[in-house]
Image 1 (cartoon, rainbow, N blue to C red):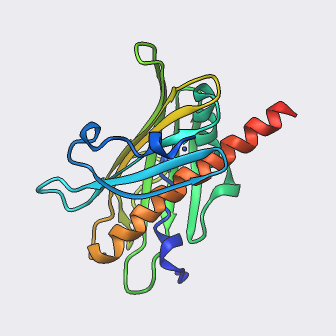
Image 2 (image 1 turned 180 degrees about the horizontal axis):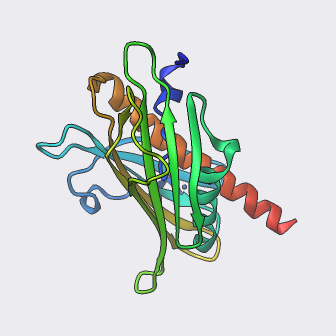
Image 3 (image 1 turned 30 degrees about the horizontal axis):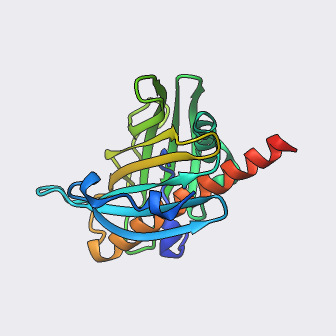
Length: 221
């Protein structure tokens, strides 16, 4: 087992952007969501939200923002981050089980420090288009696959899901709404997990924004 710094350990491969005023949506549009970090960069902006539902042992996270790239191209950037070995975070190993137009399935193992059991997860992503809203989506959730059975001594993450949704605001900019939750199980303390997970979803958003912007720039060259 390799010992890693905590932020990279929890940078789970969840299947695993503008004007800041748009990114920081009005609170009445996000009933029950607590606003957190807001940030912007070249061509993107976002705000992180969180909430915990009574009876659930995990916190749900949401990121809303804008990115200067076409909505129809953003799902392809999500797939690159999930499937390309170059994007595997430190402290993780990843194996693609299915890579098809209608779905992708990935096995991820996360190495944790010696005090905690390692985690693993099989996640399945499904792209879709909703014509009534003009929304391109990728929904993902924890999944079981015969090519990735549970491993002795490793805690299998079975309660995890999320969705990316992309809609076009104008010819230049897309709105992005990402929601996710993950129950890591075991004895990981909430005081450690919650701030790191909030940082992780923000980093996921920024990574996607930078990749999409780079791909857009390359397409224009």
